[in-house]
Image (cartoon, rainbow, N blue to C red):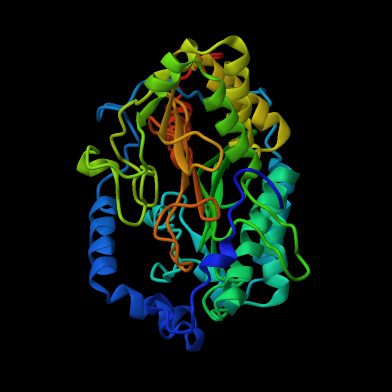
Length: 429
């Protein structure tokens, strides 16, 4: 519980008359979502989301142009390590348990538009799939079985910790009808298969997971994980702490850089600066650029090329990347890290805010194949007006068209079409 970055979140617990909490204690998720969606800012936010969602998927780029030949569908016989068989069994277990009504609710075509309708606020408005609050314990257990089958042990633990912290927040502010361990939605996309592509998503407050598997390849992206507060200090889950490794390792790296490289990496010295262009800050997403419905966002490179760092500092940065994507199963993680390293000379590191012990900050690692973001936020349910260390948002995106595994899907369909036409030659893929 100690550490230079640990802030006393209990100093910012809201009182019973705090405006943000009005009606929270007497609302369930549906009632709260209707109330919040009617507020002007949220309504405008949702309107902008719909406009973004209605545009055909392209992927995050630096200039509006998707780089070609960045991702590659596996050749026949290649094993990229996805735990596909275990995942298929877990998915079939869900379908066996689900009632006819639940089966219809949670099953979507592979390319359904609903897959891009995940969101991380607690405001329940996109009612896709099944809500864990509304189904049996047995079905909830089966859904967790698929998460556990799809993620690494550390990734599943991190997800569960996000869920536990969400429930802890609900207890802290008397809002358990909205914030609890079941305030999440789940859906399957496509038919679970050892060879054909399919996937799932799981989303809710401070935890959004998107997973596609095709054969032995697996893409888990976009990923949103967050916490407010990021520590549990009472009850059966006391000492759960989230995101401290990503936080402390990045601060240590920034402090280790030469003053020249620090100045190149630090694009703004304050977390909010009037010098920031309008696109660089949003009231809800704050400094993060890859949040919900930002699937086609143009995100220019910022900061410093990582090759300006020493070899030891570059190794430290690669470890930070690994900490972000360690939700991937071991062999999938190894392949993903190799992919990241193949574009290492085109990777940028940027920083917003100070980098003394105790400073709040934002940072981004961005290349043609990965974009990770870490941001300290102001309070939403807690009352801190300035960003502090106990409200954290993290994001992982796969730029240039492969969020949701979209690029692998495109190549899969092209291969199937070639096979159907009999035009593919042996070894062409």
